[in-house]
Image (cartoon, rainbow, N blue to C red; front, side, top):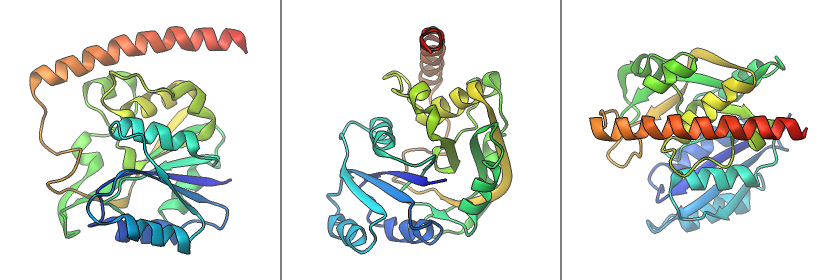
Length: 242
């Protein structure tokens, strides 16, 4: 099976070399990295272009410039692999991540995989907690409605889910939540408890370890409920057409 790694990029020059090196050494000749650049004003564009010139598996594209969710959606649309891995620009993939995730997909009933990760600081020093511990990670629509287990950087899913998952509704703040819970609707999502990633947390991260305001959390869950109801109606219509 062909692998597509989707990597949304925004001024990530400080850590991107380390991340790309950890990814590329695990991919096969026919695999690809869709590197969608929303902005590279930190002087990193030459670095990215150099990688793309040296390694033909890297497809450097201009992102839509409308935020991370739109960028991921756009990049996934450009991918051609059977299995799509999502990637952040500042983490580090541990050895055998791809091998162990792909082994899980040998079961045809598996629609997506979420693996554990070690949370580290900007210097890759472990803080003593994993993402599964942080999020109390497990499957289930209600559980993930209350506290999301799905972290995009730790996810991979089958490409045949694209037509069911995308486009992600504009009011959904969390692409990873939407992809994970929708994948549960079409098959089994397996949770690998072994950490396969160094999940770097620093001042520039989009996702923080702190709680959001109560007002924002209530609004976010209201949108999840309304958009999920709309999606279920759409799903029924699509299935009737098949």
